[in-house]
Length: 179
Image (cartoon, rainbow, N blue to C red; front, top):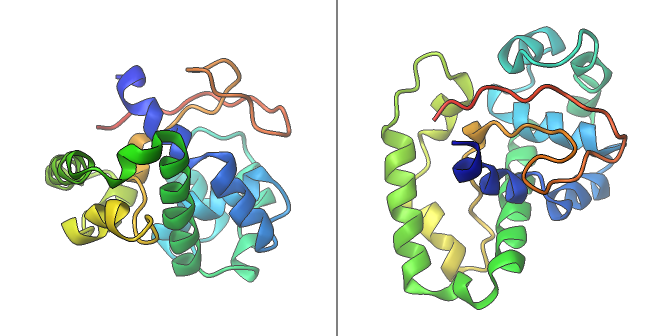
């Protein structure tokens, strides 16, 4: 499953998305990671984000939440993540981004993702409201309105599927995929 889902994370947690968050005042990769991933919860406190993410050392989430909420709103973070993810995807796949086949693949993937059970998956519940027009927009508007579903739950550790460790070099135990 990791090999099938990890490519989504290479888009969602790409340098393009990281740079977009840094440009808005995030201090480092982890500020952008936490604000982008926790945004569907609203301006949740660190304890809630820690409980939902469940795999970070005590205090790690609190180093970033609630500080990030003073710099960016949850809705702004979702928009930055979606636009950055779409731009990263377009960089990765080039001309294929404008193909009718990609629109069809995005539609099928969205249908599958939003039909999956959301019980026990608070982040997925928020993203079930994606509609096909937003996903299909990747091919039509330069990707300004689309981003991958966040519940792919990437492991962020050096050496996983060719992904480099985060800039601070910290390693974290990857979460269990919930697909």
